[in-house]
Amino acid sequence: MFSMVFPVIAPVLIVVAVGFGWARAGRPFDTATVSALGLGLGTPFLLTDVLMSADIAADALAAMGLAALLTLAGMAAGGALTLRLLKLPQAVFLPSMIFGNTGNIALPLCLFAFGAEGLALSIGYFTVVIVIQFSATALISSGERPVSVILRNPVIWTLLVVGALKANAIALPGWLADTAHMVGGMCIPVMLLALGVSLARLKIAGLGVALLLGAVKIALGVALGYATVLALDLHGAARGVVLIQSAMPPAVFNYLFAARYNQRPEEVAGLVIVSTGLSILTMPLLLWVAMADM
Image 1 (cartoon, one colour):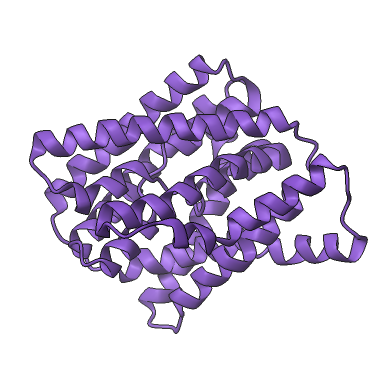
Image 2 (cartoon, rainbow, N blue to C red; image 1 turned 180 degrees about the vertical axis):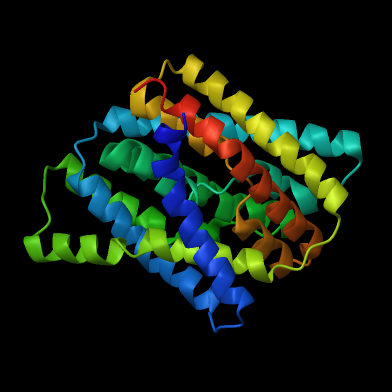
């Protein structure tokens, strides 16, 4: 198992550790700017590069989108029930129970585990999650209408353009394809560095609650991932991608939204950090199971 999993997990943990150490050393790092570059610029180019070059059938990407919807719905129901039983505020913790780190951690894991096919499938899953996260979190945390948030999301517009190009068998000019490859290539390392820096800088509170909710989040994600791959009869890389994506810890974006809407951000930060630590412990076994069908 070690020989199978270590080459996959090591690059991810090393780059996150570099970002963590960079922040701990007091070196400058503009997290807001770097995150905006990664999500607003790098992700659309990465999406364009991977989907335009990957030989992935449309029905395979659709299956990833459906898998994402099923797991998100399950996480919403399970998370809401858990918070209700524990008498914890939904507006504070529910987004973290629903939305895992399907970008910073999951994309590179799927790339290193399953190659270009895994990255393309993972982006299909990630796209659905990020669109729903940016709209639903605004609604859950503040009650504001998410329509404008959706319309400002560059991932949506990129997906529409790429989908239209693929549907009409239109290839990108060589210079534009090279540009997408070059700019998109920065996305994953930048996101991992930003994750490490963010984890080093977060101020946390409520570690007991964070440990309990983090364990529930990961366990529920694993169970829903298995149920989803069985329900959709997924195999190979598709199966592995769903198992990895569904078991991810809460995304750092949950903390950013909590801070923006003043929803006890220190406690959300505690949940993000503790859950990420738990996922590092469970990740080797998760990857081994995810790659067993290859």
